[in-house]
Length: 303
Length: 104
Figure (cartoon, rainbow over the protein chains, first blue to last red):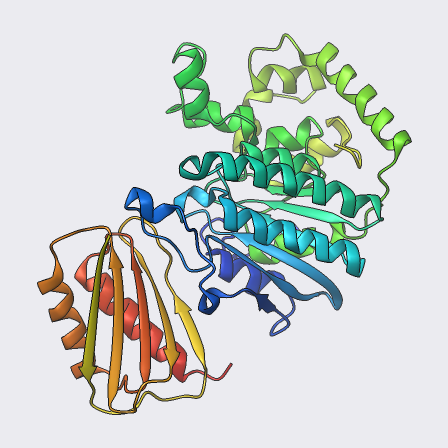
């Protein structure tokens, strides 16, 4: 599932449509509200910005290893995958359909968060998506998030990911509420230098998120690895109840007590007992997983 | 936003039976091209929305060159531009016609 192969095909570099095509069983995908329906943003034209016909998200149904699923893929190259009114409504609609159909959902995240040009509509959309996610999960339906896109998964997108039943990430995937530039703008370059890419990955990158239990599965930056990861994630328990939430609360309290004063990702890894923490970013996937499996904080269904 | 429309006579009808094809994304230096059928077989209509004002002459040249090179008859093409260079536009248009020829 995670061994690099000479035929590796980068998930990070693929388009949203390309990722869907490789993730799902060949020919199984049917798009809802495709580009020919022209359900694009009514707001962007006001700012003399070009719209995209699918508003940067593709939704539909398909099969994953023979299992029927609903799927959504964000296109991180269009406005950083940001969530506007229509983009959000398509995802909300898909999640509501999943609840009615009792069908698991796979979300291919690639987003900087709310689309600033549609701020209020975008914020509302995030809330609606979160509500729809939780209502869908309350019915025992899984909502799986895949994190390995160019734009990462930031802002409101990260909050949605936090509500998923399981998350799959690659080293290239980044998951954080505030992005590097946002932190630097608000707190200063002394607090966070957004151009220090190594710092960004130590703080928000896939390896760090996996080690602290923020995600459930770590895979190579490869379309086949993401497919295998999604299949594995769909095998995990779907429960969302009070016991799960209480366990998550306790886990987060432990995390805060254990790592709350750590100043850097590498310091967190050292406290986890990872040998030679400074070398973690250089480890290949199998070497990393060998260490991570015994040292990482466990994730759970509530995240 | 500058909106341009070119109605071109073509060298022949587009191949394939696919009803719709989409190539590219709206990103810096890129563009999306949606191809649909529905025009007369000797005609191709291209609608362009571009945030870069003042380049109609370039668009006209690129689309005329496309119509002369590719069999694009019957196609209705919609372009949302993200500031693509002319060579990128030409490649995307050719890619779109090829995709329309492919079986679904």
